[in-house]
Image 1 (cartoon, each protein chain N blue to C red):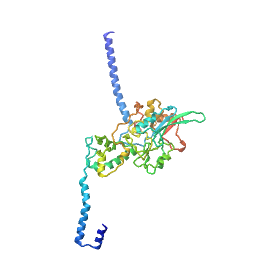
Image 2: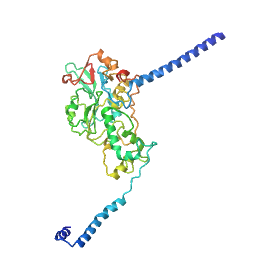
Image 3: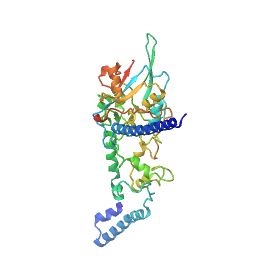
Image 4: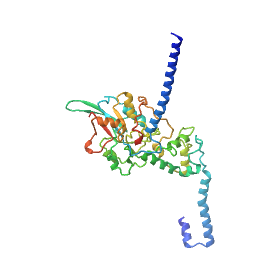
Amino acid sequence: MSESMNTKLEDRREFLKTGAVVAGVTLGPGVLLYSVAHSRAPEEGASGKQRWGMLIDTTKCGDGCNDCVTACNTENGLSGHTGPQDSQWIRKVDIRDLRTGYVQSLPMMCQHCENAPCVDVCPTGASMKRADGIVLVDRHSCIGCRYCMMACPYKARSFVHEPLTDQNPEVPRGKGCVESCTFCVQRVDRGESPACVEACEAKGHKAMIFGDLKDPESEVSKALKSTDSVEVRADLALNTGVRYQGI
Amino acid sequence: MAKLAGYLRAGLRPGLRFIVFLGASALLAVPSFEAAAGVNLPKLEKGKGEKCVEDTATMRRNHMDLLKHHRDDTLRRGIRTTQHSLKGCVECHAGSKTGSVASSKEDFCVACHLYTGAKPDCWDCHATKPGKRPVNQAAQPTASPLMPSHGGSQ
């Protein structure tokens, strides 16, 4: 190989290197801008311009897979026990067609209804819906009457029967209050998706899509527009934030 | 006491009544004087940060109002500022021995609340120790941001 050829090759290498660096820089701020535009400033607060929701594809949900439940327990500091007095914020439900024997598995949790029955019945205003559609319990004013548990058609709420210690600093929980799925509100406010969704994606099932229902460009909105999805107990006209596909 | 009241009703001489009054006040005054002398101010460990989020006098008198205001803002309105968050208190004031603000009588929150006779129930639900976010082994951080929408609707 001649010397001039070598020099040319060197030059080419240098050019590629520089090009890569320039591309990296361009990509850097692009990514930064993207993430800034997509997460809220801490002082901004939840806004009615958004509504958080989820689409669950039951055909992709793994039979016997429990990763969403485990992730929820870890994130929110739940014991993971499934006794009648244990808190379960999300549970795997198996449904079987009695005629054909076809079995489906799906995760069931708080459906974050627009017209939430738990909010309607709460005597103290503790059961509440945030501006962005996330249904929460304000434990500061919850008196533990459990009306909301009766009212919920999805059996989504649990009552804490025993004193707790060593809670997750971001998820305060205690005896005498009702609790349920919060869509991992502490994560959502940071710009992340709920723990169950992350776990499902990490497992490779991708059965859960989380996002803003009011944004036509969000992944969940696009998926909802292009597929047939249903609300569970649609007859109650609650306009749930969680919708299912394939049931 | 009944006998004394009887004498008073019967009408003691003014001088004698004064002496009885003095004796009674002395008896009443002694225990409270002893109590005041016997209670030591709580010795509080210095916080980890450089200075508190407000000056000491304001914090002593108003920390409960600041916390209450902040809790409603955070829970109900989704405002996540850290200036007056309880988590912030815990991170700075957790004791060096217990690593907590409320595990022993010397810990920051408990020491003062014991002295003032206040019994807040914050620690029934809130963590008393600063902690890291739990890491879910199965789930790795996802590359694609699942957060919503574009800037316009935020």
